Image (cartoon, rainbow, N blue to C red; front, top):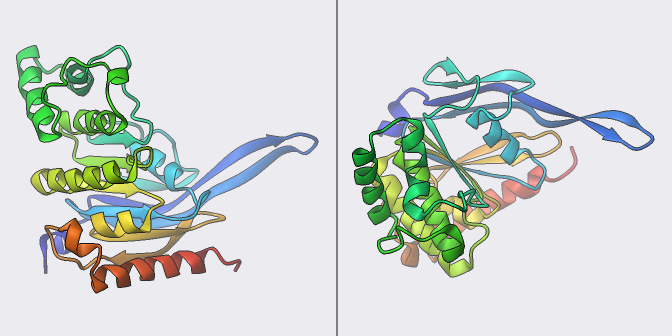
Length: 268
């Protein structure tokens, strides 16, 4: 039994629901249930991808994990303790980068370290490490508008990793870049994950991306959002993109996830 399977849960979701109150013209208030009873466990150091149709509550689920939203019912536990709000044990990487436009690459990466009151000389050492890790040497003094989309996402990833969170929450982080850059960033993310072994929850619309990156893929169904199936991705690591993406094993897993998604979209 491997370490990921044997270890107790790092993250546990127990009956998590989330509802919104909407106002519609001529109809008054209307309650929309985004999530309906989500149960899920994530092991320490596991890379879990989450896929599902638009509107199934993927981003809502990530907001709840981050502590940015409170579930209507149920609970989220990290190391057995209930999540009640944001904390520095979780880092977040979003699709839109969310960089401070007035801060340089280095200053953006050091932001979380400043929040933790890390001394300036140590902040420099740590940011140097992560600048090297994501391949941004020579761009330390650039502002976000001087960087390409791929470089901005590298800054966002380095910022999330620099303050050493235990968990990395990623919401469609590579969706805004071109296909070639996306594959490069996927390779970089796996390399960094293999080095740091953070617990990662990675939300994506791409089945291929989910299968390539993850240890397991959680497939959500919609109306309301719920876990339909969790698929084990039994592909060897480290993963070689050039050979893996054309293999029969990869194609079979991609088809299995796709089939489950299609079944989940059918009315019940």
